[in-house]
Image (cartoon, rainbow, N blue to C red; front, side):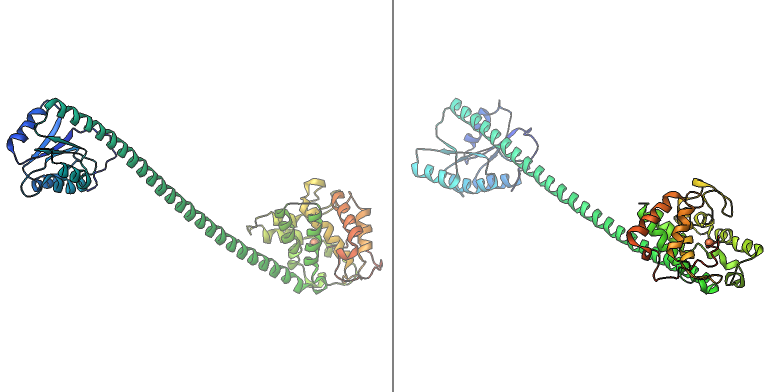
Length: 395
Ligand SMILES: [Fe+2]
């Protein structure tokens, strides 16, 4: 029976006295009457064990006679110590029975013995001293149990916390992974949509096939060199890939017309910025794609279209795409003229630096041109003929 407890000792000491002589039991009751003890008595060992087993709280002291019917004191203590190992055990013998006492010490684990007749004061003094020791022992045991229990609680709490942290961490990782997958899917879909829209325009103007993709590559190179943010570079990539989507509303005959365009035809061409804006403004891109495209023909001195914006009121992304557009358009063949080449395109943007094109963007282009050569702006060698050089090389 484990009656170890973690509450401080508050109850009265329980004492069990086992003796087959009624007079002895009464004598003990009388002697201990003034003490605040809870006293139980039993007439033999079996009755004593029954009372011990029925106890709701531990006995502090067990006193037993040696000579009794049914079982003697040694036999009784041998079993009683199994029930309450911490109880102080005192054996009463009628005479100096040395063998019984040695046996009681070895088998019954008795702490004290008294031979009859005993002196009352001596008996009370021993009982009190034994109980004080019991109290100390029980308090010590209580504290050990309490510490053990608190340690177990802490270990359990720690385990629970660790499990919760592990669970939460793996939940978060799974969610992050899901988000990543979703983000990648959206990116792939967006990329596919942008490319498809770009192809639609190219099918109507085969002469500029690949132009938007090339402008996107050049623009992104400039943006990377200018150390723009990842978001700005993504915005530039999408806007450049779609920058001429407004040409969908321009008749094919004008787009593919060899030779110079009339003023009216030029005005029709110029509508492509606004048309693109109207197409794209309702699409919720994570960047101002429609505005960038609307402004890609604006020029630093206000001579561009459609709004005649000046300087920094033109979005930087639009200034970059506008410059890259001119470079690729001049470097490539057009229905109204052969390719002029990257060298000529460089001359054009350097000559018009600050007037038509952003100075910082031009400087970056020149730096790329000097360090990586014209290949940085083209995939294959183009003609460098300056015949029919148009001031509006890029439409
Ligand atoms: Fe354009």
